[in-house]
Length: 141
Image (tube, rainbow, N blue to C red; front, side, top):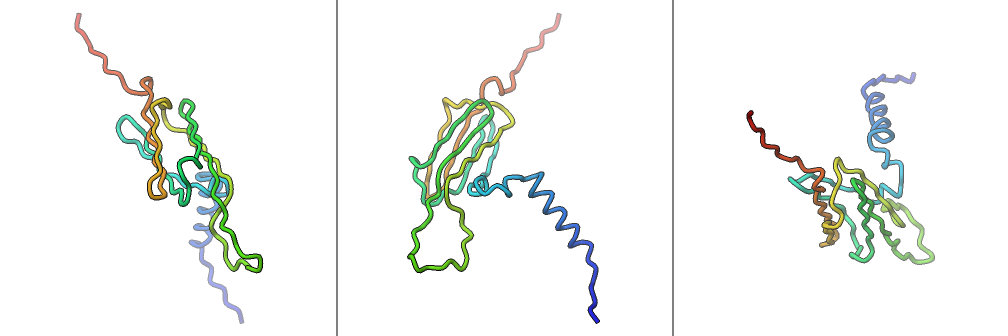
């Protein structure tokens, strides 16, 4: 006789994962977006975006900044394989990608800096002056 052990935690984990992949982090279902994973940090008066871009050079990447939106485009080239090769496993992603993120505040695109070093892209985006808090002196009357 077949005996089945009911495990509600596995079901709950599956539901949580489905929710996370579709609502919280929808780019996981978009192969073009999943090709480029980003880390974004706020450091004082700037945002720093980092991404692994193995094999890409600076001229292979295109960065656009408009207000609080940053778009990064490029293409990960597929390796050449022999004609008689049959893939047993192919998990790495190849092809064109475009990744757009919206930051919490506007940034100054004119002062943005981007560099690639050892396969890691680093983009520094200073916050726009309008996004920085202003100190106002209070006077007594």
